[in-house]
Image 1 (tube, rainbow, N blue to C red):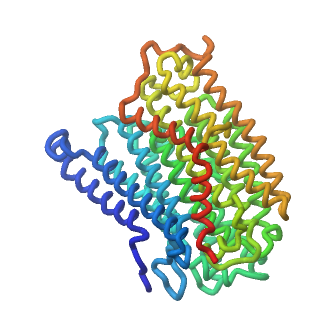
Image 2: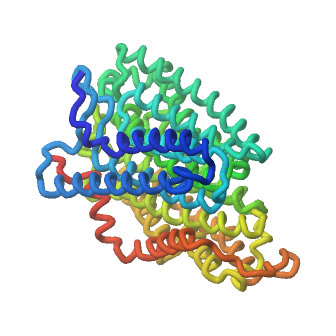
Image 3: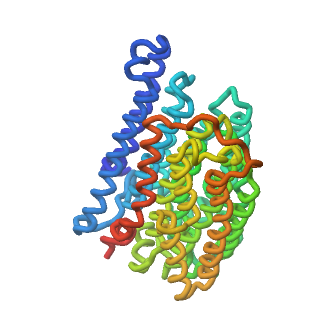
Length: 535
């Protein structure tokens, strides 16, 4: 085995070491609560410090790779690690580096949310923050995984830590229920995915690397019954991580019952990992010369449309804001899948590596750059919305939408920020959400006009669903600004967040609004992450 240059996964290695340090600090500090080490360097402050450092390293690494590619210093876009027989188990490229940065940055924001949600007297705080850090490591490595074994280990590690985090509030019955439902659905989908991987392993000559499977998975084998079953079973597991309909049943109850910071983590970081894996899998393995000839392509087309409509239509009737955001998150997956399917359809011929898949894309396409842009925009607007929910929920002791009635009078900053985040989720200009949807839908239309009219239909359905989503997003804004007497009483006292929470919300708010101003450099960066340096 050729290990390769481990500096390309330095953020994941550093975060793993930091998570162990935080866990050991907690063990030592627990002997003297609020004294000594627990007083001067508690886990709830140590973990964000370490995570901020790792996020900076991840950002620097992604920026360095993009700059090197743009300057022509790299002859190859992807760097293989742990190479066996010419096939890498981890493939580090700017696409993976950017999603890794999103995972660590999202985890850092979730840690600030956790400090406000749980407070200073949180039980087992070292274990909680170390679990968050380990989960971010799994998400980061999943973004680079290019081998079935690596994919399964990363997804399972992320799932196991997520199960524990969802049920972390042991005194809350809803949290225990959320963790149990998440675990049961996850175990079933994981078993199905593993079975599909075993079939792929068998029919392609005993290979586990995606690049090796792609070589063997061609011609009649791709359209065989065994090949069809293998692909669909793997997509079941990946669909579970993304909460793609009909593998979404865990999401509403888990989002509502889990601690709000954990819900925010699942909605962004976990989805980033699942998105990275499904992009690699679909563009390398499950992508024959003509995607339209594959049954799973058309099934994904249908599931994408159903996911958008189901998430938005059911969200209309929700009275709990976390549950509403859960169904909103399901709909957002549908939008992201339009970009993924566009990338899959942009292939001219089947390929045997992710780097080759990028080479075969039209350099002017908006597919994968659009996915990256929308994922970053989703990080900003969704975590920003959950940050406001954390602050308001803790002060008002309620997650009901009715309890937000008159919020503008007692918390103008929070109400205004939440209004912007919800408007951005609806895709209304001039917000980050609008920019992301412009790239996603625009890319689908451009590719569809060439040879895939079904993508134009998906883009049209996406626009229709964005209009539908505006109804329940703007309903929350209406309640905050023009709440009627029957929708709850306005809070008697001002609702204020801590300095740290207000800072986080302000940063998310600024970036959500400023992203449209920097649309050109953001677009160039995303395109460089996908296309530049490929000859």
